[in-house]
Figure 1: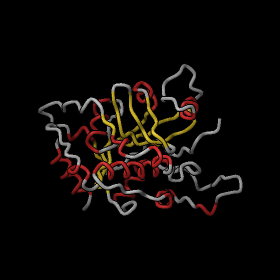
Figure 2: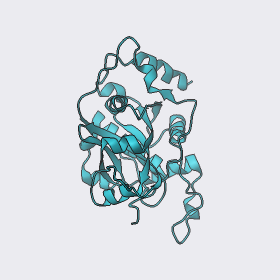
Figure 3: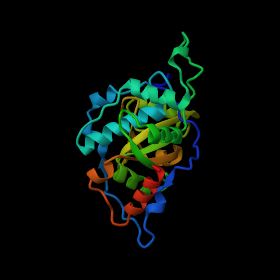
Length: 260
């Protein structure tokens, strides 16, 4: 079965500017669980999501398309939707990886379309911005810790996640089914980057290839291989979310150091 879109997430890559989410959990108390559910994704309509593939239907720019989707959700929930263009997402992909659209062959292949590491995309946006917006930094989240994952979505509006997609996920996506574990998953088709914008008792919800994709909790735990929270300018304050045991002052100090 043909894939509905392209892959393009490379293996997790260390970056000295990556901050650790766990560092900002105050040691004198356990960070309380977030709300029982969160659904940042529903501020945007199905029709709007469907119109924002951001090039990932034809090229492996999922690591950049994901940033477009996160920016949409964060800005809309903060009060004013910012809608990046496909051109801006492809330009970001080109700037980070050297992708050259002019080298696309008649069969659709392109020798410069080789995917990107998620942290390389963050690093570029930190220095240069994206779609006229800036980020203050990013934090690495332990994707195996469900409470930390939920706190990331709650605090930063999204958890930008790298997954290794099995072939079974392609069938489930095209049949409008949740991503769930099956006994024979057909093997891994490729690395993919998706923003998770919601969670609840039944699982998580990401945006990929133009639609909301529900994900079972066991599936997420099996196939996710990295996860990050992105700190966009003004987001942290506008949400009004600040759990008592999250050390925001320490985070601000480290973010300020990154900008020097």
